[in-house]
Amino acid sequence: MNIGVVVFSFVAFYIAYNIYSYLTIVHVSPYEVEQGTIEVNTSYTGLILRTETVVNAAQSGSLDYYLKDNTKASKGTLVCSVDENGNVSERLNREVDSSTVLNEENLSDIQSGIREYSKSYTDEAFYTTYAFKADLSGKLMEALNLGALNAISEYTEFARDNQTFHLYRSEQPGIVAYYADGMEQVTADTVTADMFDKATHKKTSLKTEGYVESGQPVYKLISDENWQIAVIIEPDMRKKLQDDSVIQIRFKEDNTTAWADYTIEQRNGNSFLILNLRHSMIRFANERYVDINILLDQQTGLKIPNSSITTKAFELVPESYFTQGSGASAQKGLLVEHLQEDGSYSEARFLAVTVYYRDEENELAYISHEDIKRGDQIVMTGSTQRYEISKTARLRGVYNINRGYAVFKQIDELFSNSSYTIVSAGTEYGITLYDHIALDGDSVTEGQMVIP
Image (cartoon, rainbow, N blue to C red; front, top):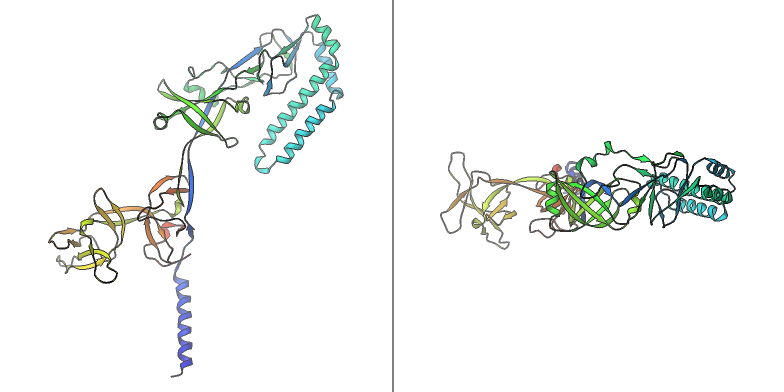
């Protein structure tokens, strides 16, 4: 026999076998198990409660503003003016239109704001453009109107002496806002469930450049940095929060977080969570509602995709029936008597089995073996006691593919969201960090050969 032909035949057979194996074997997308964290949070819309005072006009006349919306004002800061005969207001408007009232300081401040926004702008934060536009318009209005007022100071002094021109200044430090919604007097003690209906909420702008009647509101002053957010919570959430008094929240608008003291009040069948905050109020001075996440906890462990999780059926057997095999490996297993077609049982023989999970409370082991079926009996070593395989149960887990074939691993789930699940690390029959598991758990079966 030609040795070359033999070697060539062997190599050809080996190559053909590998090509066949590669074409027929299942290709599975792997996922490497990593350490991870999922934040446990719940989304709510909260009602903002503040110390707010609506200031009404004491006279009727032309109304002009000198301070931009949502601005901190010290005591005595000029907010607006009312001109009873309209002459001063008319001259103010002419000065503003002349565009000669902006000084170098005003222009520098406006240009600086534009440069800073341009540097920080990103397409992902395009929504901030509207806030920037409003802020820039407010700065320009403030600069133009104050400049115009100073330019005609002699004329305004004459009108004030004649008591036809009236300046409205902040009576105390606070934040000036130009809207009203009728909820300025609502407190944590008077909040009701119907107030959370945004569809019925009516927000009225007070900044109507033009004419104002005596008794009509002209601006609102928020005089306390301490503020509250009221939230209606479910019984389950109330139960989770009842033993504590401090919680972390996230503002969904910009993903910033804050810690808040809280109380829970029961009223008219509703549970109101009252969050007390001491900063950041100015960011929401122009809003009555705010969307938040309540951050209950963080779960840390092994992070796996939900698509990897599947279920597998197992036979349940008492742990007391396990015995040790003979030989060098000395594997643990069971003495099994197989049920024959005629109803009799075969002679007991030892089968090494893998335990996938132990129910310690009931002293049961979860096993899966192709040669052990329902109806078979297992024998207790050194005894005549027998146990018929009849109980089955399903476990949730993933398929480990580290060795090129699928092995089911039970998981202990801690928390999950729509995409990922956090499972316990270091469980006896589970997965470990950096294991490779099947990304699609339902696409493989136990013992199946796979290629990542």
